[in-house]
Amino acid sequence: MEGKELIGCWRKLVRANFHLKALDAAISRFREPKTHEIIREFDAQTEEQVFLVKWVDPPATWAAEIGNVLYNLHSALDQRLSRSS
View 1 (cartoon, one colour):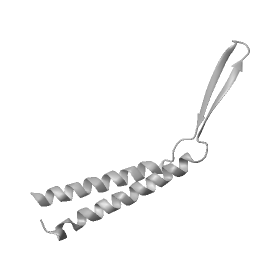
View 2 (tube, helix red, strand yellow; view 1 turned 180 degrees about the horizontal axis):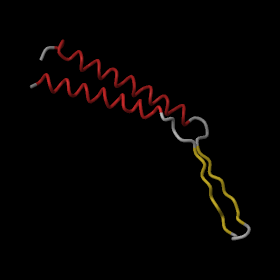
View 3 (cartoon, one colour; view 1 turned 90 degrees about the vertical axis):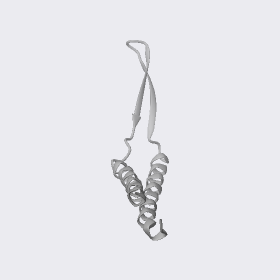
């Protein structure tokens, strides 16, 4: 197989890597501030310790980034396999 035929595959892999790096950076930024908190309280009526967990949901845009990574990887593999047959 000639190198020119693989250019499309390489472009898809580069694009997948771009989205993967963007997702990795977004995850790092998300983890920097306090994204969760555990609160301990005492319930005087029941004399029990109560633990509450508060957290921030990850951004919904991550699903699109993950989809872009997977789409580009799938497309690169599909192009490679279709050219090898």
